[in-house]
Image 1 (cartoon, rainbow, N blue to C red):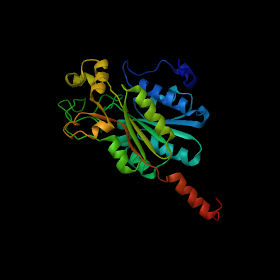
Image 2: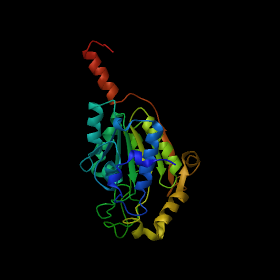
Image 3: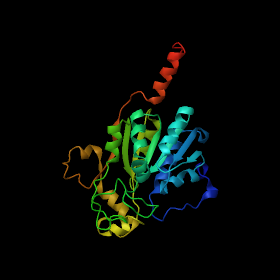
Image 4: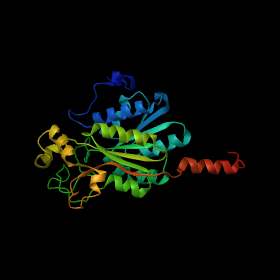
Length: 275
């Protein structure tokens, strides 16, 4: 049996997440991926902003940083530039990373910095009262869209790919072995990796949308099961068939120089091309 206690600050438990929250599932996937990578805990920095996902740094026994709302990627960029030998991982919710933090998200992708972002996408502002977020599906009811959300939502993976991220993947909190693998591959990737972890918030999202997602936490997990489509199968489906589906797997994976390499070349040029 896997021993999670080795990677946790056990004195901080129990956690504060609601029963049935997918955050704990994704946390365990991250821990298993780190264990598979064989990384020393002292060589890892885990950074978060504000929101339900931001509690993760408090629970893991790594170097950790809990930063301002939407600024996790900015802080993480500074860490990676100052300590390029460190393994930098950012955990951020869909509101934190794509709304107030949207500009940092775009430029982290553009710079292709060698670090990993796990976007905890429960499609709602879970911690602050259930407002709709940039990923809330159209027509879904929230605290700030009681008659249904009229705004189109972001596709996290497409945004990351278009902005320049070199590894983009999506998994769900139901398909746990796949999520483990996607996170592990992101950690191993040289460049900016974005893993969207599609999950559910029953407390502030599901309760207002029971007719669509079901009346319980388990029903929302089953909804993920029934609406997830592997990327290979999705390629054979029409846009209409994919309307309410979650396309899962590695969606984009290329190699190209990133910000750290470019800075090193600049430094070397001042040193007469010593390296």
